[in-house]
Length: 340
Image (cartoon, rainbow, N blue to C red; front, side):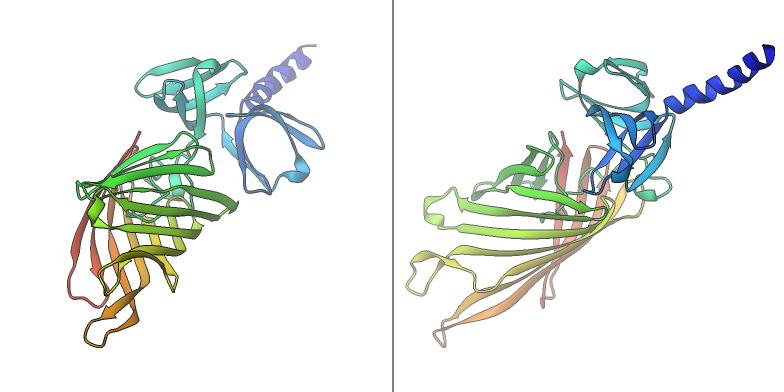
């Protein structure tokens, strides 16, 4: 009898430990489930997912399963939009138990939790990285195909006069807009989807017009995006087609569709916990009028950019230069982005 009790005491801690472990499950549709393992049999796994709650996952649908240990680093967003970054130790149907460096031991009612986001201990697989890239959805101005998550939002200011806001309506759709004071305002809806572990595709538009009646400015561009890589290291190709409100030789203004597409080729790579290299390069054609020959011709133009992004968990500063292709001039670029 004593031998049975001894064996039971050896097995019980390991059993309880196994019940509280966290796992990450990759599904064929590129979605990943993160949660607390509950049980399994020959055909399925019972999981308490961070946001979806209790669920069953068929083993035949699992591409990969990663063991995350007995606690995981998460960002908890409360219903009042406050966020807490902490170590999650246990989930239940009605409570979240965690430890925060600032707040200590936490026992949060699930009724007060809006969402829970898993944060890898070492973001992007790099030593010394302590938080995820706060702005993987955009370069200096142009977008990547990586979408904002539902409820995420940010404010961007460039050159003081250019201000914009973007808001995640769902995990795949965001809407935003802004103004270049006092000249113009614009809107920027965007859709983005993860179609494979390192591939995102998306599409969107930029439409702008002027505050000033006599300024006669207008721009409308629809584009498609493809991004390869992670949130920390990626490259994006955007291809768009648009129209501009343009003056002709008799000084009248009218909308004219572009004869050729425009492209952007952009990339970002994280080189340290708080620094990222960013480049964004525009290639386009303009229909230009030569007053001497009184003829139109299409001219290929481009703008090359490169610089640094200095990051915190919620904000970033971009510093770079803009170089018009073929010109011996470099224009400084600076912007600030706050994720709120």
